[in-house]
Amino acid sequence: MTFDVNGDPDGCPVFLLHGTPGSRRGPKPRGIVLYRLGVRLISYDRPGYGGSGRHEHRSVRDAADDVQLIADKLGLDRFAVVGRSGGGPHALAVAAELADRVSSTAVLVSLAPADAAGLDWYHGMNGSNVREYGDADKDAKALLESLTAAANEARRDPRRFIALIQAELSAPDRRVVGDVTLRRLLLATYREALSQGPDGWIDDVLALRKPWEIDFARITSDVLLWHGADDRFSPADHTLWLGEQMPRAHVTIQPGIGHFGAVEVLPEVLSWVTQPASAFAGYPVEPDWMFRTGPADQSLDRAAGLPAAP
Image (cartoon, rainbow, N blue to C red; front, side, top):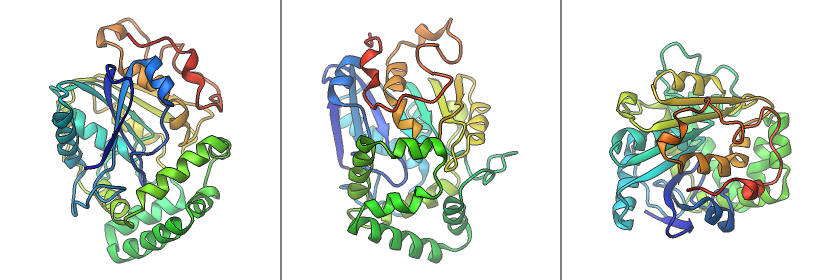
């Protein structure tokens, strides 16, 4: 299992679980910001991505075993976990299976389980994701062929991957992806994610559509569920459904923000997960200093003005 550790070596350990497709080199705050937040950030490649070998037929729940292995290797008894996009379900698996070790959890722009009762799973989702997840259910060969072709194209030129999704971006996401710094980070993570080929991507899609094998009732940590209202990749209804499953969930749907807005709020989310649970006892669901009601600032470095983590 390949992983990176960034930030303050004496800071609060936080696992960051990347999106689909993605890698440990996905967008994250600069080292100086992590130091200011007091965060020791651990990111790893899920099996089949980047430097991690494939685990065929893996489930979402298997992410808990991966995190446990890395935590044990680093000698970590307690840690927080953050999952973005396709990493969100995997973060919930960690929170459920390792409840005695997870101090807090944040899940950004996540999907809900495929069998979520009462949820119109595909409502508001863009066409390419509908096709991918539909193929995972009924045509594995078509899924293999389409993702292999897309991965090969991205390996030759990662800019092609961004071009493929460009037409399906909401207006807020076009603004975010248009940022030169973020585009460079996305190119790096896609290049690393698909360096072995499409296996990690394929296995993620299949795992997300299979039963997750997660008992939400086992999650004892506070859980922040954040979503941009204009997300076309994983619609905000999925987060609303997840919020109904966990008694300690704090749900925020931010207007004027899309899927990639999750990158911009990450420094603030990292500050949230490093606070003691008691610090939120008298807080509203979203503290005023943390979430804004309008479009987020374009700068990836805006966390420099945040209060330092304790």
